[in-house]
Amino acid sequence: MTTAARTVLTLAALTLKEAARRRVLRALAALTVVLLALSAWGFSRIAAETDSLTSGEAKLVASQVLNLVMFGMSLIAALGTAFLAGPTLAGEIESGMALSVLARPVHRSAVLVGKWLGLVAFGSGFVAVAGLAQFLIVRATVGYWPPQPVAGLALLAAQTTVLLTLGLLLATVVSPMASGIVSVGLFGATWIAGVVSGIGEVLRNESLARVGTVSRMVLPTDGLWRGAMHSFQDPTALAQFGAEMDGFPFLSLAPLTLTYLAWTAVWVALILALTSVSFLRRDL
Amino acid sequence: MTAGPTARPGGLGVDEARRLAELPPSPAVWCSGLRKRYGRQTAVDGVSFTVGRGEIVGLLGPNGAGKTSVIKILLGLVRPDAGEVLLLGRPARDPRSRARVGYLPELFRYQPWLTPGEVLALHVRLAGVAVPAEERRACLATVGLADRADDRVGGFSKGMQQRLGLAVALVARPELVVLDEPTSALDPVGRADVRDLLLALRSRQVAVLLNSHLIGEVERVCDRVVILDKGRVAAAGSLPELLGRRELRLRLGGVSAGAEQRLAAVGPLTRDGDSFTVALPAEADPTTVPDLVADLVALGVRVHAVEPGRISLEERLLGILRAGREGDR
Image 1 (cartoon, one colour):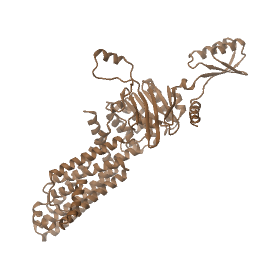
Image 2 (image 1 turned 45 degrees about the vertical axis):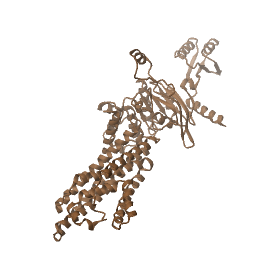
Image 3 (image 1 turned 45 degrees about the horizontal axis):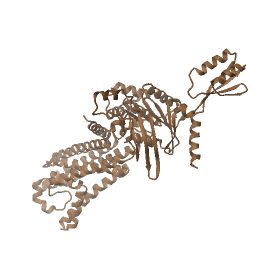
Image 4 (image 1 turned 180 degrees about the horizontal axis):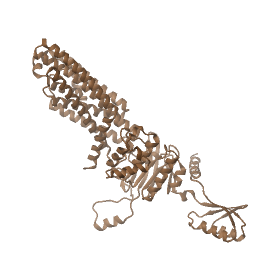
């Protein structure tokens, strides 16, 4: 194993251990359990009410509510990783914890990639476990199973990755707490931009619609989120009622294009490279 | 790159390789013309020095003299604006130059969610050295943390964290150890432990660069001293070189003319009643003093007291720094 690979894997393992042992994990677990419990109760109420609905309507409602709950989940994942990514780098530089690690025969970029990899593994693991639990709850309560669960969860994991990469970049220039707050703020802003753009489409207002397109390019979280939603909702129900639901924030009409996924990968690589440059130049 | 005592591997004939292997090892630290500015403040201004293998070198100077900046430049933590650094014969730009270097930062803090044992395991992995678990435990024991090996670092006091920092600096079998204020959080017992540790390192031919405010500490263990002031090397040299002549103070009774002659044979003599002061040559023979005493006794002199005297490093340091200040005016 080369030195760089060893450094990356060692730091990734260290980051996972940190995530597992710090309070942020417990907070994350508690939030997730609350959300899962609330959704279980909510879905059981839907199940009780759906007698009066057609099966298509019921599926559409289930899709919408599932998307709503998954949005909450992605928000928890975003908050958790953004507040983990910031402190893990900036906090270590500030406290001096980074000094003894970086004085070892390691490349700074390998240390950075190791941390990033650990955070990605943590975020994706959380999304997979919590998402799967949610699907099982929905299946048990209303008998709905999303059409592309794996693809959807992968997109949610990608969304988390995008956000934590941004958090890492910000952490090399601003304080740990600020980097968490700013990245979560940007995440919210692009989501709102997406909603605004949806309204723009309904109103056939091109400049409003462009807001979302641009923000989805600048920060791909909202685009990935829309792709994930598309994998969670029932296609037949959507085809039936979709036109009426245009612009609704918790339904997505179009799947993601490969070009957009490629752009996301490029975006992550670019931000990581930028972070690496900023980290390399930094005097500790 | 300026010519440094470096070995270029690769592309060598058998003969050349053999001759290279016979060369004395490159110094543990070689740095030349280091310069660093932070905004308009010049922190390091043309610093050059070497630390030989197995040598303990003390870095002294007032607050803000640039000692920590120099150390961070050596370890690649701060990028110098100019200058060259070789660690154990490799340019410091190459991270591999730090493979055999241990470091205790001035600002020491270790992952609070890990145990000391895990911290050492992490550093051993990062250093790329295979150190068996018993050796790591032994390392924790040397710094007095053997019974805390399984507690979380988060619950440690400052002093215990600094002890852990020492273990981290020592665990990966270093050939050079850089200690930045290693006793700042330690009690007197801890300080004595560090002194013993330094002497043990020297006996194992491990080079040490020691930055300390405690001049007594430096004076007791260091072979050489580099004094920094306002980012420049104000003075450097071995302790005898820096402290100049040593002297011998004696209190004697019944001193005959012959005895006085014997005293004067050692070096310039001053007398004040029954107190005699003989200046010793800078590199006195270790037998000079015992021989002198034996001869004096044989000459019938009553010897009440013999004490070596020398200007303390503290006096010398203050002298150098004050001379520097006056030179500025």
